Image (cartoon, rainbow, N blue to C red):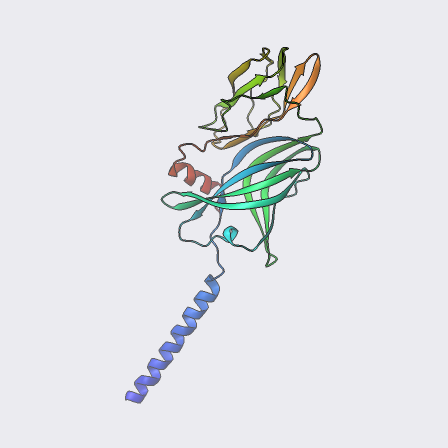
Length: 264
């Protein structure tokens, strides 16, 4: 009887080992889905320049994150012709009740002139796998027009703002003559801005909000325009830093909405 019991017990142990071994073999490489903020973005830049772009994403707490591994080979905006990511940095940020918030800082090189619309980033890993992540709608505008700093950002130019209600305009005329801004150079998805001429007096600063004329319910915007302005009857270009909208006072409900947009 004892011998029979030992045989049964041994058999049960073997089954448990097989079950747990199979479970861990199936789950050890299983990663949680990364949900990126769905940005509505307009990024303008001078050809052959670099700029740092931050992408935020959410991962369920206590879950494995494939992006945070050290096995990344490259990151790029999928099928982008105008841009190339030269380097990246992964940063763990804050957390909500359900998610950890993380950031990817991309050093982007603007390598070819033109306009394009991009929706995904593509990450290649050293196991030859490739993952695509929806990041919203990115309108890139890379121009040969040189950056001329007769017009510059003022000390009160906002780099991060609350919910988007228009473009926060705050620029200073560094010259002894009038400057007229004739085009904001902002291209957003289903969102338009008032684009009327703005006069800036010599050595003066103009601070206004260029209001949006749409009811778009997107929360997160990144705007880096190409300003066209007239100085002494000649048109020049200026590319200010980007403004990030929607990141102040981000709530759990905001995170849930972004996760829902990229959940299957």
